[in-house]
Amino acid sequence: MTASTHRRIVVRPDDAAFVPYDRYGEPVPGMYWVNISLDRDTGCGMFLLRMDPGSRSLPHEHVDYEEFHVLKGALVDDDGSVFGPGAIVSFRPGTCHSSTAPEGCTLLVSLRCGNRLLSAEEAGKLPEA
Image 1 (spheres, helix red, strand yellow):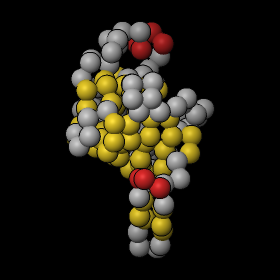
Image 2: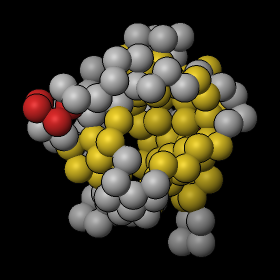
Image 3: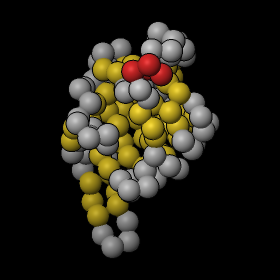
């Protein structure tokens, strides 16, 4: 459920209305989100992200810091790092990666600036999870 007033937005992850994750244009298969405060023009703000089992994020570079809190499930980064429930992760500017959710997961994501999608050539240089 999402409740909104002129003062605040309240989101409860267990009953929020997730929609296809389309931050980069076309929806990413198996990924859904609830935009809490993300400004699509600047890429700054916060959102809930749900990844279905087996889904993978698009390879991207962090232009500024990105932090996320794993609420449910686990996220596996392309270097093999596993982030389970309760983990809070901060990616530094310049970090390039892609992540998978073998069993599915829900994250609370905070961006200080938008990400840059990697070209196929750049993405090919990332490690395999």
